[in-house]
Image 1 (spheres, rainbow, N blue to C red):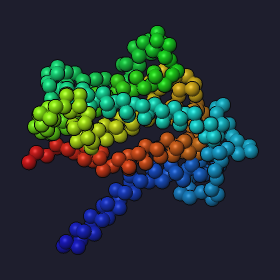
Image 2 (cartoon, rainbow, N blue to C red):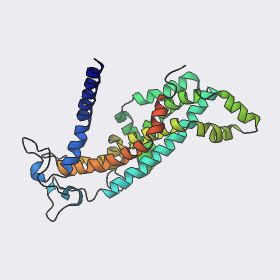
Image 3 (tube, one colour):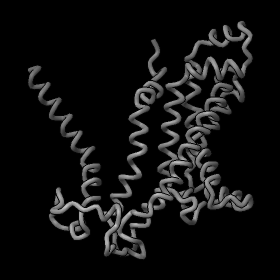
Amino acid sequence: MRTILRVLRYILIVVCLIFFLFPVYWLVITAFKPSNEWFTWPPKFWPTQLTFSNFFGAKETEVFGGTTGSIENIFPYLRNSIIVGISVSLVATIISASAAYAIARYKVGGAFLAEWIISIRMLPPIVSAVPLYVIFSRLRLINTWWALILSHLVIVVPLGVWLLISFFREIPREIDEAAYVDGASTFQTFFYVIFPLSAPGLAAVAVLSLIQSWGEFLLALVLTNDARAQTLPIFLGRYITGWRVAWGPLSAAGIVTMLPVVVFAILAQRYLIRGLTFGAVKG
């Protein structure tokens, strides 16, 4: 009976892996298909000839709705995404940690402030898009990195604060008191004692902030208008035209968009899992 259950479990695991990993496989394989195999039926699960034209172009590159059928001009958008994503991740982590520590240790704002902060997450981005556009246009920040960084912080900081409040509450208050006895100020206690102890929670906030900023489309569409500040999600949209979807370059751009975040999440996986599960079970 145990052997049968073990076999069934492995079969279920394999089925789940196929179900979740097949879209990734299809994305990767489509990126190396020539254009005449994007719409074939029945679909080809392996291209008859691998091509790199979707990445680097070709001598006779196809044009789809005014957009070339390759991603050879993706690098400005990749640069913008990296700068905006890393900036949002770092700033959001610092702001979230400072606010969460003040709420968890000193009850700043009481329960109302914590609930109000997380309630911002319930607002759809389109609600804030128009007022943010008006504000940034007055400040002459439209089509700049600053517009995207500041607008993304509005989205990612509430979740970071909410995660870190419970994380800081699990750190014994006696550690703060011991630091005060040794002569440390509140600022020194926070940055030199509590900050290192909360590394898993901070890593979780940093990873989640980067992922949310990296994939944000609506605010980037509203607040930018050319390659000087537009990010990768906007670049992906150019291959979906009114008459055809350029699946090859779209898949190639999807790989470039997905890879940095996946690598970053894998490197921070240990801290991410511990940060998200810390304090979930009380002994």
